[in-house]
Image (cartoon, rainbow, N blue to C red):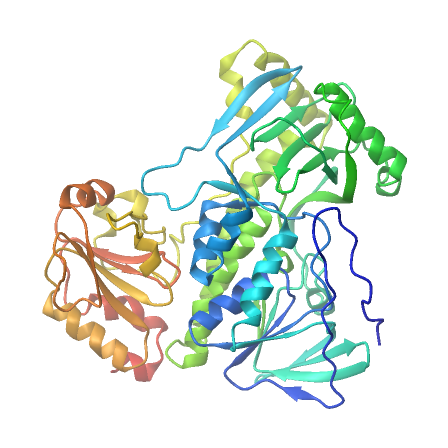
Length: 565
């Protein structure tokens, strides 16, 4: 048995508390319609809330009794904010977070590249938002505590997993001893050092980079706006890089690269941490300001993924499934998309309308996303932390040329995390009009968001169900009958009409908008029909709807009874 947490973590700004642990003298068993999630980080809790939105119960097991130490994941993209909106925590998150749109890359005191991510008229959220992970986790915990479909078990460390064709038996260590917990489905969201992944002997593919970075959170009042600051080869740390991010409560995040001859243990000694922070402050002209150290750690730049995220009845998500460099804010933001994709597919299997094979599409969709991200992240990582002499020579040449020459400056671009388009997903229609319609809303992509005159957004209506979006003031009878049959068979479906009419007969949701604005936003050519997955990604689209096209798209992954309905 492990020792319980009895002392709350120290922090200059965050009020940590110790949550009471769960213990059991007898084995426990989750109901057949309940998912067990191992790990109470942001990804595991996002999945639990997403499942709850679809009526699915979950049990969360976490070894910890308090929230994570330090800032950790701090930058959340627009797509992540849309997912936070889906699970109900976007509003309180934005009350604390710092939104931002730009970042500067600085060399020899000169801004050599500025990245701007403007906010469009139909954007519901800023492209980037800063908030320490402990604050985010607190929002999750509060939402979970208010949700009767989710049970949180603090102080429950999973030390073994044995699965059969029908279930998984977890051995769980608590401060009062071990017990066994059985569940039909287990999601391993237990972090980058996933004990479940390691216990199963699963290996990741990809690249480990030499670059190691120290994260140091300090409290200081700096007169800078909320922007990403990247300093290349500063005088006090030549050849290396330091990033700076502003966070709430006067906390600044410093990420600085270590020289290869410095061990993590040496780097984290208080005197060495303080010297590095002070050297950076001296360099930017604020060395006389008072500051305090709050938290620090060391991480390595890795770009790795499992080749398959579904292993029998154990499914991997977040860092347990993939390890990505933080450059371009890819870690947690990629994991949130894992949870959004997995939630509705797992719900479909548990509710009986989706085949078990539908879970393999989670692996196909998200492994594809991870591999795409690894390709892009590798470019950023090789620039931020050159892995060889050749890459370092190339990076140094770019730095030098950028002082005077515009053409090399785009090489500084850090390739910000973006939503993956599931263009090869098994859910996509193969007999529609996708090939002759606009590419930015192609099958697999997110349906573009749209702001209505009443202040609501299209994305607000596109969660938890398959949505048939009809751009026009009439719902074809063939669509109404087809959707009604699928609804009667248990598939979560709805019809959304977007038109100038206040109410459209046959629509579950009528959204009113000027036709010119809608036409411009969606590049309409006729009375288009879009089929949108419960995670807001398009899976079919038609210029003129054809009978049974929706069923033809979905039936391959629906259970036989549903497909025959």
